[in-house]
Length: 290
Image 1 (cartoon, rainbow, N blue to C red):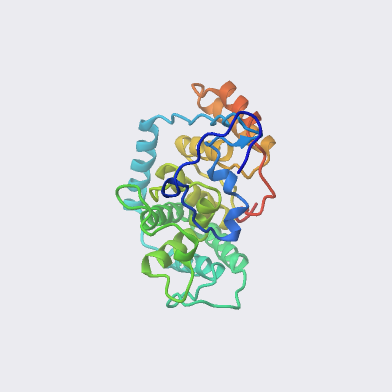
Image 2: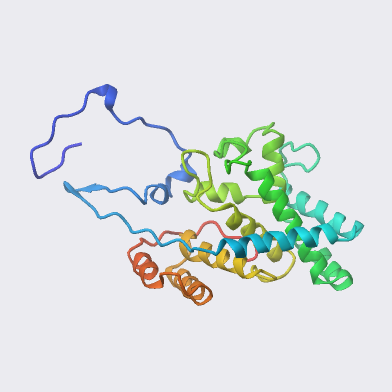
């Protein structure tokens, strides 16, 4: 491509040219999300790189305490057939939402939204067993979903690509992921939150927090219901730093709330970076319950 301005530099030989890869049309609309750290040539001049919103340095001891307390609660939990039923409904609801038959995982072409029935059952169990029992099962399934999604090295257990979850036989690992995380891997992929090494750009603890938020929403609670301090920090960081498809006003509010919980957070730098970040849209993907 020719550009105006200074004389063009010699073209590289063909074997050094850029490699091109085809991408699904659905992802082409959001390539900017994955190219946010690159500079572009416009009129022969490089545009400034968009600054990155700073990460939240959540104290490791708070994260460890959250996980330790959760493991202790899970170990002390009493077996409940009713919660087992709710768990099976959760898996079924997720697979049906992704166009999969819960028995065998084959494609289905007539789906229905099973969320209302699931929420009705969860409300009944909250009344009968108490909030803590239902919330705890959400922690169990968040851990299960995280284990299905990531291996011990933090890599996705399947290549995170659209065709991984398509076709007649997506594979046992892919179905396990869809059963406990529904469309979360596709959301990560769609919004450029997967790096070239097949790793999530979100920390595992943040992914676990997102899975807990999904459970809360599906069982009729606010997304941050019963969160620990560390989970609340991870949630607010996700809303402000990573959820680039949200309006800037919502992201700013989340960053300000994060700074109140974590006084060491560099709020000024974060807001400056946010102000220089292009607003993406339209907001085509929304979490269930929003």
